[in-house]
Length: 274
Image (cartoon, rainbow, N blue to C red; front, side, top):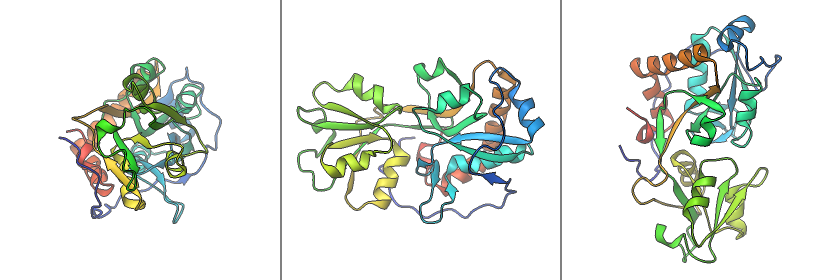
């Protein structure tokens, strides 16, 4: 199944399900990473979930109402319900989430974490549930970059978000263009609009956001499935019982159809794994 260029689609009806209490920040002391995570969650009756609140359709804070939404927000609520635990979101980013998982600030990162060899040395991954190639975003008025082949050219500046899979991918791939690593509070969109960058790289969910929210944005499809990355959840290494529970949860959501319903709700069916 190959993702198509992001497009606006109608939202699926929201299924009715029990919603655990959600708090914006962790309210308890982190559990030491060497502890039994599943037992600790049940003892404190709280699930701490790392999310990146800027990840459209994944773990996104809607600026219109401040509410969290996305496939992994729905999945986190479902996991908390399964564990009979209240849910606390711990906000982080792709530069820092592994630190938070390792030090016990969160029990799990549910933010469509791309599986890479480097990350696998520090965290354990669940079974993958989505996969996305890398897309390019530029402005509609940029006449120099019309197709993918125009990107890797002298004088072109390619922006990537710090800590994402796009950072090492573009460093290894580009031969002529310059890579600009963008760290918060700067944004890739801001670098494009300011003229400091010509194009930025991201995945299906984030580029879909650009099409939906910005008239100036133009998405360039990659050749084939360039940079195709499997997405999963990340937990601390060395805790097989907790990883088994997460994988059992993922399998249950596939079987009962809730994973597919959540993907439909947020327009992510094209990148959902079978």
